[in-house]
Image (cartoon, rainbow over all chains, first blue to last red; front, side, top):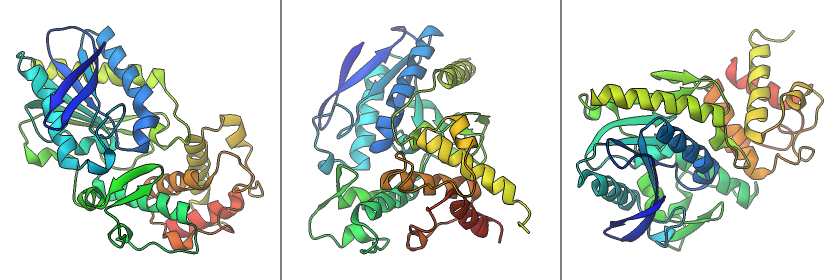
Amino acid sequence: MISQYDWEGGREAMLRFGPDTGPVIVAALPLFEEANRTRAFVVSILRALAQRGVAGALPDMPGQGESCYPLEDATILKMQSAYEAAVESFDRDGRNCYGMAIRSGALLDHLGMIYGRWHLSPQGGAQLLRELTRMKQAEVGRDQKLGAHWYMDADVPTVAVAGNSLSTALLTDLSLKEPWQREDAPDIPHRIVRMESDAQPADLKVAGAPLWRRAEPDNDPALADLLADDIAEWVRACES
Amino acid sequence: MLPEGYETVQKTVRAVLRDTLGLSEERAAAFDSDTPLFGALPELDSMAVAGVLTELEDRLGIIIEDDEVDGEMLETFGALTRYAADKALT
């Protein structure tokens, strides 16, 4: 079902899945290009959760997806506020929200009444900024070498990276933002899942290809089912 | 003689190309050291190069400086594997 929610910057679309009662998984896609590469996959996970009796929602973030909000005016804080507003739209009805985020989506679920966070291969802002810099370098070619703070050298407040018009403020913001850390609130459940090929520590490692790296968007229904099993079990454990 | 661990690096480079470019298992398995990459694989455009390099960094725990990236390094599967092995095994 296509629903909507209001935040201080306007109204955004929100896909909703599953029952109208009980806990809700509020999903956050990665930022920018990786959102396109993982959207079908995340929707598959939310559909699979609905089949398992767990409700889910995928709110559009300001400047992302179908949002009318100009991306060049978006900041991480505004996206965090929008995510918080999406969570509140369920919290008002007495429903417990759980954050589910992929990659840099894990930068967005910091605010609001969230009873637990489930992160797939969370990515820090600095790493994302490094990738954006690498993409920009690929765009401008090897004759022009970009420094680490290339976006600050720009005369204009926005720069184009891989088809996205991003504010220099947002890029500066990224260099400082980190995914939610377990130490931030040890009492709030936080589960980290990573691909087997990823050497960093995780609560669960899964086999498969990282879809966010795919040059063209793709899906992995078998992995979506497996992750939905994990999330459903985790939420039930959190709720009990 | 190839350094110890070279085959592991080669396996990782092969898997990264397969996963990032969406190549079939058979196609990736058929890569040998002379298989041309950049300019020969239609999937490997300059944006995809960024994804390949970043995924290699993550999986091998290495840092690739962008000024080290040139046509030669990406010319063949063998050249890319040698570059990655130099970084990962020393």
